[in-house]
Image: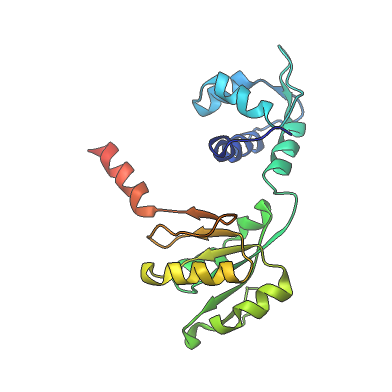
Amino acid sequence: MKCISPNALRRLPVYLSYLKQLPDRSGNISATAIAGGLGLGDVQVRKDLAGISGEGKPKTGYNIQNLIDALETVLGYKSVTNAVIIGAGRLGTALMEYPEFKEYGLHILAAFDIDPERCSSTPGKPPVYPLSQLAVFCRDNAVKIGIITVPADQAQSVCDRLVENSIHAIWNFAPVHLHAKAGVTVQNENMAASIALLSNHLS
């Protein structure tokens, strides 16, 4: 598989979602058809797909199911990655209860919080433990991803704590840009920036 750029990786889930919504997956589809369905440039789509599949052919295109399988493999959906959430407030709880994560290979094992009143264990849902138990849990359960849903003023210290416990991939929902040492990937989800873009478009 060729090296895939971060921008291309952001587009691959969009292609996958489009393909999985097609009423018939038994045939072939061209890069041009995918581009047309998503309102993208066909050259860009063809370049992105070339990074994961070499079977696209002129006038024939890609076998839809094979392309779906290739996309899921590249995106890691066919493997299982253990994750924990730090911050069991409304957002953290909503993410814990989101069932679609399993389709993406993300397995949220538990959440952690400094508030004892939020710590609980409910059948069928990930448990919420005291933050003091994070280190032992991460070590015993091969946790790979940390999801941060704490207030902004607590986020950097939580990020540092996750890194100290060998977490090398962090998904940050706190409204602050986090910094981590080399070798650690931090994906910052800035909701304020997204709202600003939408508001600017409307005005």
